Image 1: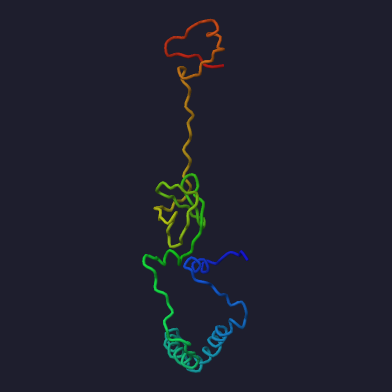
Image 2 (image 1 turned 60 degrees about the vertical axis):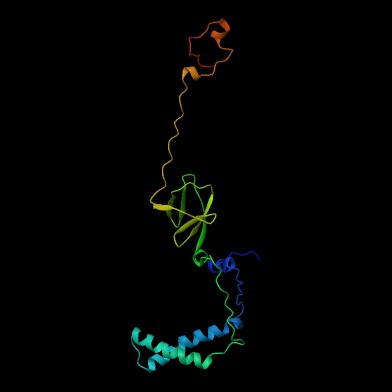
Length: 191
């Protein structure tokens, strides 16, 4: 199945972590039961204690969660720490951000969410990756940029006018046929 990945799935995939989805209500049961408890029992407990402010609720929540965890906690089968150490040189910010690929326009601008960004250095790429921690990257390299209000106007291309001495001379020109030689550094226009 080739379905689009969420940003969270993309980040885990880039880090080499397998995502296992809970695709059934039974798999979601434990967390759903917790939410039900927090939405039902917690509110009733706070009402019984006369808690009416956010500060009082935050203080009560600490003791409630400790008691809740003590009652329902299940110890792991193994006490070994299964965390993998972070490899040297790995910048988690490169993975744990929102990434969007964008096309670089001919005027070296890219757009994202209705905003234009002018890339301030020459690049040899047609696509860049926006990282919504405000980085624009290509081939693993961060690019300098500034936000701009509108796209730059393309420079007018001026077609150079042909000077007489630069005009092509054809052997079929009437003067050539008559044997008339043009003056030095002068050529008649080609017909």
